[in-house]
Amino acid sequence: MASAAWERRNERARAAGFRNYYEYRTRRIPGAPKPPKEELRRRRGHSGEKPLERLIRSGRVELVSVVQIGYGDPPRFDVTVILKDGTQRSYFVRGSAGVRAVKGAIDDQGGDAPQIVGSPKALRAFTGADEDTSYENAEEQAAILEEYGDDDAPIEAPDDSDIPF
Image (cartoon, rainbow, N blue to C red; front, side):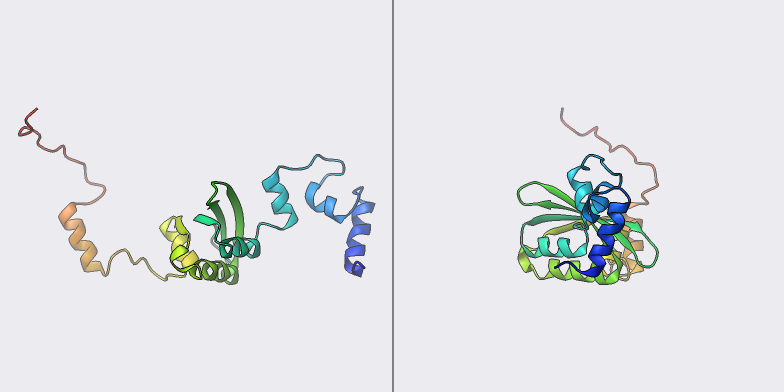
């Protein structure tokens, strides 16, 4: 038997012109056509961290792409996964608890873990790293810039006069 809260939601949806609460959640306008598959998943509530965590734990995920879409508290991430069969799905992860759950699912895969890609800032926020660890320290970074030059410096063409052709 349905809960009292579910019955109240169904009554409000029927009063608004929908068949039931499910149709209200997925269509938003009485009699409107079904939305596209990804939008329908989102409206049903099947695109959050729990479904993403279950999918990652299933071992079917090849790649995880992370884009931070909200920088407030809690942070929000748009996560796109590419499955081993080539299909793609989008999920939304909110807050540090959701991020920890998804990151834990990835870490639990061990050597079979999917690759994670994204901007450095999003990856730091998603993986919990407090700082950029690309360089061991500032001195190493300065030495690399001195040796290879600044990214903003003009690029000089190599001297190709000794190439035999």
